Image (cartoon, rainbow, N blue to C red; front, side, top):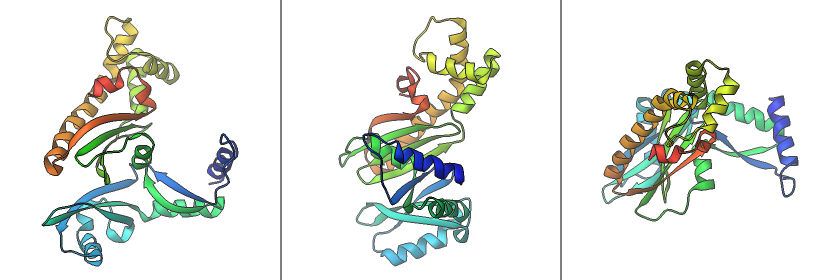
Length: 252
């Protein structure tokens, strides 16, 4: 962890408008390491009973057992009969790495959070009772689709593909190195036609991946709206791939 600790201290020292002297921090873990599931329980269950019910059903919905995990939960919606409970979990070994980082850096970690939830706090507007927002987080190795409403994170889906996959496909299609492929990726306009042959081939190379993202959005939004009786009123795209011209229009 020495390199990570050094980078952390350097980032705090170089922060603007002034250095940050923080004894406590929040850490974000990638969606590839954190998993979520929404449970539906009877409304009359109390906190201890919810905790017990999660423990009984946990192994059915997560890729590791209850004993191998650390997790937390919160009630995200209630009706007269039921309550929906969002559970976020990660493997105990992964969480332990953050504790080791805390010990070496001298910073107390207050909580682990999903990267998408952290991004949502930075970019999403206040959401009203009947509104929801879809946040598409394009990262290097994965892409997450997360739905938020006034109660916070409601539903999430992680696609095991990211900008590296796009760069690899462009590199293969154009027979260029990764650096040149990345330049092509961030130069093209996805919604513009009549460009050079290289631009057209670049668009063709990444079209299947972008189409997968769009298809998953088209599947996820109606599912959420039907279950929660709320409308997804806005879509936000964050991450490096969000800088591609025409990215938002393509997704929508």
